[in-house]
Length: 164
Image (cartoon, rainbow, N blue to C red; front, side, top):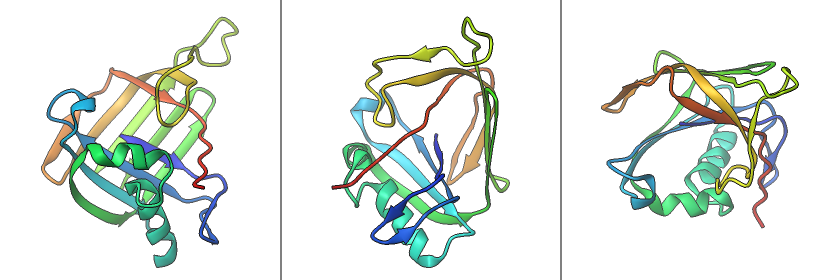
């Protein structure tokens, strides 16, 4: 699951501020082996122009980091506008897609007791510095994919993407 809340951003002159997007994937084996099944959910509050921009970015068609991920996707199960709720408070993050998905994670506190422990120098396409988190809720059911993974690991991080 890749869930993003766009604080501020544009694509091709289209403002994306405040919108949310979720990419759900299922892999038949190791992620690096490919053949992923993917479903993309774009924020229903957006315009059709914003939906097209989010689809271009998160399918990799626009280039950027997702272009490196796109070849791993064997089947796109759908691109759907959805009501996506994003919440962030302290070490907690929650994203839900209307009746389809509910994901919550809580960062594991570091020595200061206030910020999450970090995984540094990670080979991840979103950020090389990821907060280490525990999944407190993880439920998804759509497009024939279904999982309940509460209690498993999770990560969160700010991202900054540019397509040149």
